[in-house]
Image (cartoon, rainbow, N blue to C red; front, side):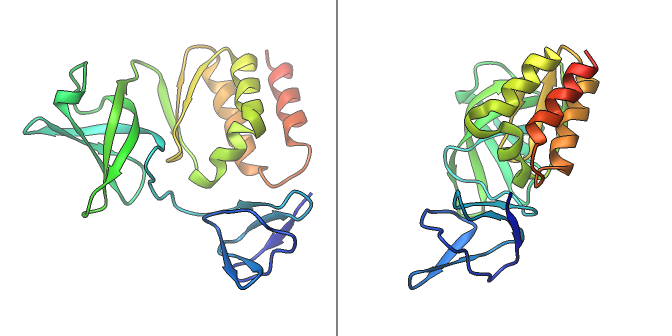
Amino acid sequence: MGTIVVPGEVLERFNGRSDNVFFDGNKAYSKVLGIYDSERGMLTPLEGLWYPRMGDTVIGIVEEDKFNIYTVYLNAPYKGIAMSKFIEEPLAAGDIIEAVIKDIDRTKTAVLTRVRKLNGGKIISVKPSKIPRIMGHGDTMIKQLVQGTKCTLVVGLNGVIWISGGNYDLAAEAIFKIVEEAHTPGLTERVKELLEGKK
């Protein structure tokens, strides 16, 4: 069980690295409103935008094709672009894709690579800060969701989740439960009970 910390609050026993923490001398301070587990040295943000980094896996929606360059909506203040010569399957506006960020250019546009079209399915958006909780330690939570709903789930670090097949409604309900209760103990067991109770 962690405690709520506010930006600028000292994090006792924190000795790792995090984008949500800054150091002044030997002391670590939170940059965000979050839950801090001092025993594990883990800070979980309660809010926050997603800022793209090279190597991030994202899910986006193709907006348009101009001069063989696709612009992609990424659920963020950043746009994505993908060059058609690096895409095996033709895309059209409205298509959902999974991709990896190759670079961030000077205009704060995410250059995408390893683009894959996701056929069918539906997407839901959550706060990007909740994605680590949806995945779970060692991917335990996402595996539980897949097993309990029989859905195929593809999770983007930009807070977009693609769901295909299986019990979509149950998967969405479980995901939103995780989002709402991310900071509470015993969540994994409660999600398990939800999934088993509605099979």
